[in-house]
Length: 235
Image 1: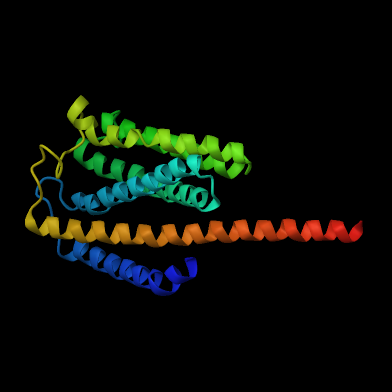
Image 2 (image 1 turned 90 degrees about the horizontal axis):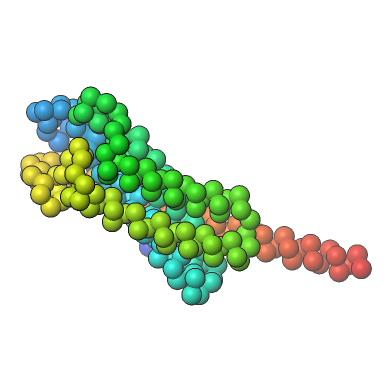
């Protein structure tokens, strides 16, 4: 199954990811209009929001794979959960970097304890803890199940991020969601292309990271077999 996806689907997705990323960057810099209030700084929007969506996608993969793993503890679900968390955390870090850069221009300060910003930071801490646990906590079945529970519970923070502006208010802008003013047609087109590019790139990186973890597990099994064979010969 892995070889089939590699040979038929993966190259197409990877090529589309590269092409759409190049197109998105060109549109952001040369086609998207400059916003009247914030100026060129507003163009961070075209990478900030897609990065947030990519991080949500990664954490969703982690939550789904973790939930399935709790009922059917197979290695491929565990590999998928870890790969999703690592990529989700990567994009979440980018969100926490690009957001303050944009906020400094919009609010005059790089950080406020706005409900949505705070909830995003909590999400980073939760899945950051998950990744650290998986990398330094060992590889026992018990630890994997504990991490799977964390991967599912941490996902609850994502709906809180989405609805925090509506529930608690705050300074964070609402553009495309309920109550937002929407985007100008030119901006909406660029935003759509950028969103597609980020999600395709996410899918490409997710598959690559999954393959790496799969191969690492295969190598570990081979090492154990070699060690067992060496012990038998010595005996």
